[in-house]
Each structure stands twice: as structure tokens, then as C-alpha cells.
Length: 210
Image 1 (tube, rainbow, N blue to C red):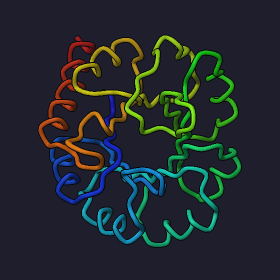
Image 2 (image 1 turned 180 degrees about the vertical axis):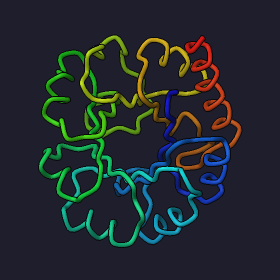
Image 3 (image 1 turned 90 degrees about the vertical axis):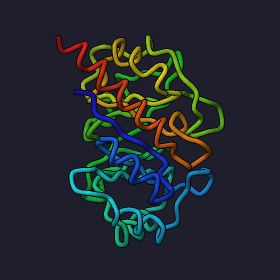
Image 4 (image 1 turned 135 degrees about the vertical axis):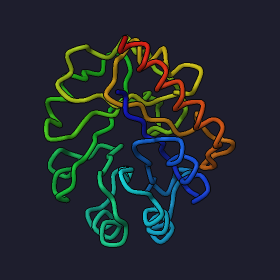
């Protein structure tokens, strides 16, 4: 079963649509430069509205220790997700499970990344776009992902209902992560696109299990 994370939730309406469609996790973005950024009070309100058995993930990009602790004091997060140049020691100091994002391009050693961040729950693989830290909606070459990575792979980067089945067939990730691919506008999730994406994931899982 491929797990599904819908990232960049900014509104309760979108949150309800995502949870009702069967997503396993939602992502809240604590990065001021992102169009999907949420304030700490906004995130706290959204986290309180999350139904049982849906994981709440907080996304950070090169934050200060103080900022992460401020967020954790006010927002009920289950998992931290780091998208910058944070060290393994930095990521591990908050007594929370964490995911480490690696931006993929030719020449990036994902085995080395997995070894360096061996304490992570998984590696989130996104497209490498110069000057950004993800959230671009760009797809990368899935053939660059080694089959023997020692950590669970969360596949991100340009996924949508039209390509997620092919992605799962090729990569066989632990989970898929989508943001812009299910939006009517930046940060505004579209219930129909969310439902279509999740249906594609479940349908291809069923095919692969036969």
C-alpha cells in the first residue's frame, strides 16, 4: 500500500476534502517564502481540525532551533520534514520523527544522503531546481533513484493524477507526496483533483497486488 501525503494545506475546507478522500498525511508549510506558508496560529487551528489516524507533518527550510521549538509548543505535529541544508544532528534534536528532503538531479548521490541521514524515517525525493527548496511542481527523472536505498522513499515533485500511477509502477515508493498537482490555486486544494489523485494511487496499488 502506497501511503499518500497531501502537502501545503492552508484552509480547513481543503483539509476536510483531503482527509475525507483518504489521505494518510497532511503537510503544513512553515517557510515564509512559500505561497503555501501558514502562520503558527493558523497551523494550530488546522492541526486541531485533523481527524484521527491522519499524520500531521510540519515542513521547514533551514529554520532556527528557536522557531521549530516555537512551532512545536503551539502546533500538534507528528513528524518534521526538513527541506534545507539541515544537518542530521539538527534534524534529530527535537524528539520527533523526521523526514529529510533530497533534491534530485544527475550527480546527486542518494545513497550517500540516505547514509548521512540514517536516523530519518524516510527520504523525500523532489526535483532539483536552482534557487528553490521544492514546491515547484517540477518532475525529475525517476531513473536516478537507486533501487537499494536503505530508507523508505517518499516520492515528490510534479506528481498529479495523470502520472502518479506510472511513478508508483517505476519507483515503488513507500509514499507519494503531492501539493500543486491537486490545486485550484496555490495553497487551495481542489477536492475533485485530490479524489482523482488518491483513486489513481489506490487503483495502481490494487493492480500491483494481483
